Image (cartoon, rainbow, N blue to C red):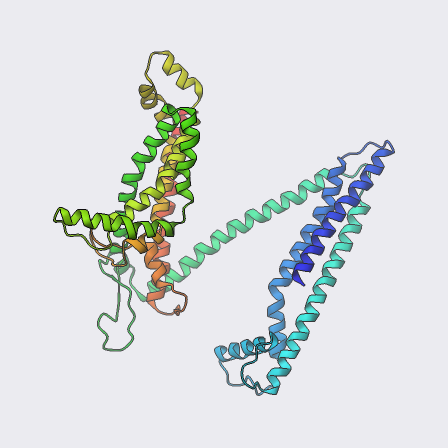
Length: 458
């Protein structure tokens, strides 16, 4: 029934467009001067139907289930729910919902069968009420919009006001979503820091987020110092950026300045295919190819090496970041005014001197911005690290050891079936808050660099 409602809404919106556009054309055919084009009259009717109808459907779908559940639970016998906690009440509601969906297990009590039949009837009635309410909104909107079709009606302003309202609504949703995410992080982090001291989290050198399963369990109290985790993140990020940055920049310079058009048209799309490969494929490549090759090489040289290493994870992550940096650098070099390049060549400079002394300094804002965004992506990468670097949090900067990162620990802590009343689970939010602060600082630094040099070269 929901699909039918959306189909009805789209059909009515198209019908409103056709009717109002045809009416406006009829007025124009009489020779009357029209304030707005006929398409604006059609668009005004279409938007006037589409926007309130869509809002009505979304609100109905959001609250329909809650209202029906409350009505069903309110209709149960008084002694059925007495003495039950919230979990038991939810279990009863789930069982009634299963019966209403036709999934019968065992021999349910008669009152459950009656409640399921009542729920089914309410859902059917709600579906028809939804169609009826939507039809009423559509009819009112079509009538109002059609009554406004006149020569002096400012249809273009009406369409612009509706679209402006939509843009303000979308912007507000994005802003409030961001605020909600930050507040949820801060709130849950506050709960974590009420259990674990802030100083222990910020300056602790041990990360073993355990909770006691029994009183005499060893290390049952857990250790929540995040320094090994952020150190592992930094090690992998430095390795990946040390490899990806020069290769990405040199490939961008070659493709932008020295490669022939034919080679560039072939090589650039081929390079950017790397950016579209799923990270899990990179993880397989790291585990099956890179890590064994590194271990074999280290064994030949007599160097001790862990099965899972930061070097393998960082190296494969660098391959993933190369097209990211190369694309940003190429776009920045292409955006340099042609007059700077031609002026340098006209003064007798070689292509290499032009790139080094003219193009590269002028393209610094875009290049630095791309590199720092690549850093943010490296810091937030999870799949490659969890497959290639391991889960052990150690205070080391040796790239041949196993390390872990912030995002990997967040994934291991939030596995979906843990309760949110212990420090082990809440530690994920503290790590998320710190990761948010770090990436926000990187992005702010990148924006300041871009704005500073853009003012100089614009």
